Image (cartoon, rainbow, N blue to C red):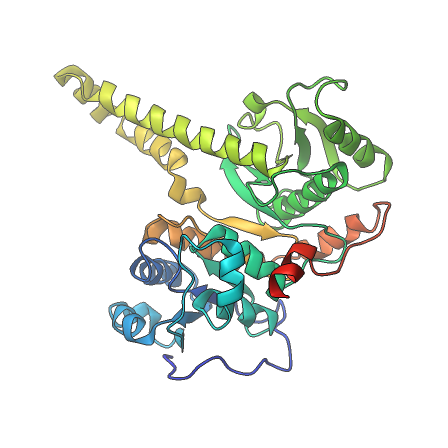
Length: 369
């Protein structure tokens, strides 16, 4: 149903796991929004028949786009706003001017309990800053982390943080490990995920003090996770670990390196297979295997970084993705909305020593003051 009204008042009763998923969407966020957003929702709707979408954005642009996809009829409701957060806005600027924007309203819908999760392909820094203000952090979490799903030799692995925190102390690394483990259980269906800390070597004496202290905390605090020790960079894709925890600087560098390597392999393979008539014929015979490899390396099939540690589900889509990639992010949000990962996180956080942090981050309070 396409609405002709602004944001509604908060619902008095929060949605529960038994409800059909309702996904709140920043329809104006991203390099190619709103076109690829609506395409992605249409792709999702074909496979998630019980899901509804709340679209926050410019009704004049969204209405004709939705009309092109009959599958969205009766399942996509527009909440009009002519404000949006630009892709180049600094987080501090976005916070000051974002109230009433499509990004802010999408997150507010989760806070009020009207929707189960929010998805945006908009400005990452702004989305994280606004999310911390609107949704606050989960009890016991110092700072949220961005978790991404990476392909491995045996399936999938969760890697976090992907850039939300440039540095991370020992306790934060343990929190990342706990959140990543819960994510792997709830979304990837791993009954007992193996967790590791990214390090420059697997030996106990290697790495920074924070990493070695985090390993000690995991072993001695009674946290109920399968801890596999330190992970070297060349083991991330091996399949030996289901969860890899690290600081945001290292994680982001690793992510960009992996993406660049995948592009290099794909380009080199394409060039080699088109070099001559013989190689082209060989490529034709190997087409099923090559298609499988292409799908595994396609970043769109793993698109979607989850902001773990917030009191609500937020999924960040790559800003330059297409409809297929955005659909992947939305399906991830649906999976998260149906999971019990919050309970998994709370259970293990309770085992950690130290005071739980529930207050608004200081940097966020400074921006609003």
